[in-house]
Image (cartoon, rainbow, N blue to C red):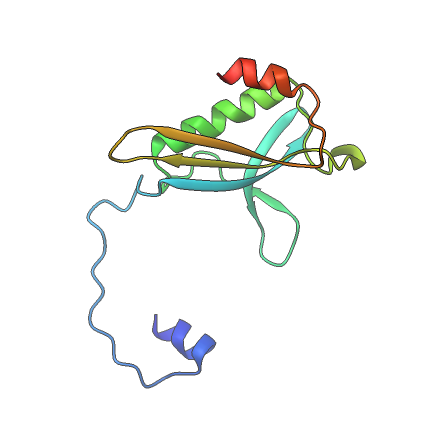
Length: 132
């Protein structure tokens, strides 16, 4: 914290109280918004590396809720199985670019959103039937 305030706000004069860590610092993130790319036949879901367009695969991220990780893996599997195109794959503009998954801690429900680029998504009807 001290380093961040110094570096980004130019403040070295702030006093901090001791920071308490979490008892169980895993499985707490209930939302993932992950970019997609294909590596061979495998769909990779992850975050952009700093200052680049390189996607870093974060499959099985230990701070994501397990149901979020499971949903991301299922969506990747369906995209692979149905060969749904990804955005900017082989020069295409149409295709899925992002997976967003939310887990409701109270409701135990999952919300999965696919963000697509372009106006055409080939085999979208197969996708909706598969995942209904």
